[in-house]
Image (cartoon, rainbow, N blue to C red; front, side):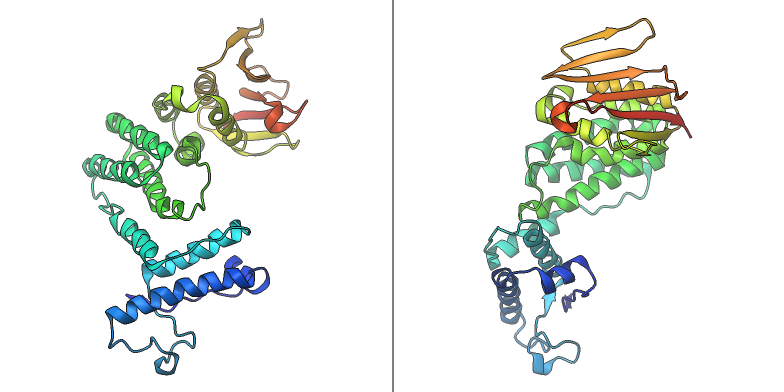
Length: 319
């Protein structure tokens, strides 16, 4: 289907094009559209509307297909987020992205029995076109299939939707719009949904399937801590977050157990508070004793992430 690329001036992209884009960046976008327009003109010599004087819908003279229209926005997004970057968007490159887009599995499951195949198809797509972290993600989501019988259809559907979104984002990797993507970045949405809306049983299953050895060390652990520390809503202080969930103690305990499985050491004091030494001056603490009567609390003391003498506090409470 052919359409005219239109960018509303009040969108972020429109504002950037009008106020911040450099001449070189605008030229890159124009070159991309011109290359694609010429390809369509060669393929459709009788198509009207490619020339401004024959068009009754636009004065730009750019007719492109839906895939290229989406890619054009990706190009703009890439240049917005990488102001010093330069990239040559050749027709061959555009064809590559288009082929990847067309390869994304779209076999939407009609019944719960169809979800395993849909998950496997999307996982194979990630292995084929993704990076190392996507291969780990593919293995992770496939491992969840074994637990589908104990999940509701809604829970299984949420897992599928999150994996489908990850697959849909793959073409953007080819613009380097996503740099240093981590396993936690990709699976955190489905875990967050389970923590806030699901049962403790589902949260535990999702956490137990995480390949700890691969994703809970060094920078990858730091990334998890950054994600978890943003759960919920801000409390009465900037370093405190409040998470409302169906089973606060069980969910908090599962998160703590997962994050600290590679701890150098753990200690438990007389009140039952558990402190895990994660190395490099980093500590994670779990407690069920609180002066504010919250059922469970996790403290993150990661100086290189949050600053010296700053402890991020996640308080769990019942819905």
